[in-house]
Length: 252
Image (tube, rainbow, N blue to C red):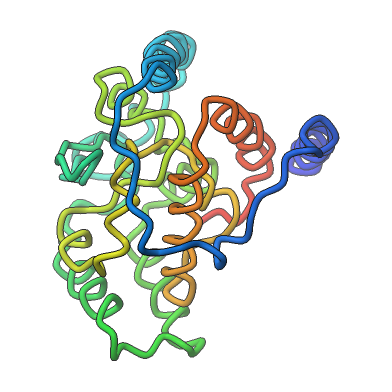
């Protein structure tokens, strides 16, 4: 089954690459970090919102039976609630409650992760070693349930965020929303990623597996998206997400 999914993913990816070969992405390292974000509402923004509303509703209806099965698997495989909610920061710094299927044991607090993020975003925190990366993934793996590992690998834990999209908190495409305590530690130039709605999928998510060593690189990918956003780009990212999810690429 895994080999079949990999073959399907490869075929889709090849088809997308040939269809969109004329579209080139500028290196995120070439971005002007001081560039102000665009905050004006326009017709393309209205189209994006309509697109998000209609597609999220369709996906909710299609995936409802699957979400019921996942909810049952989470409920009966470990103690705790079916859903995980957390305050995240969205468009223009407005907070909202994100909705996910729970993948971790409920007794694990967020204090350790909060302390880790605070250290990570300090200028003098050294992340250029393998131990930091190993400790980061050990932290996640040790707290993740068996069902949660599959949900994370397949990105199915993110399905409930379709409701966040339908309600207008998020978009189908955009930078991933960060917790409030993480945004509080942002460098000033990071904040420009908040000039668009956070997304279920995004350009940085497709291009790198987030680790402590490439945190700032992921921010630069997000800023590239902010600077180059269009509905056409959103559509391409959605199509590129299909083989990414099917292959469980860089799952964590």
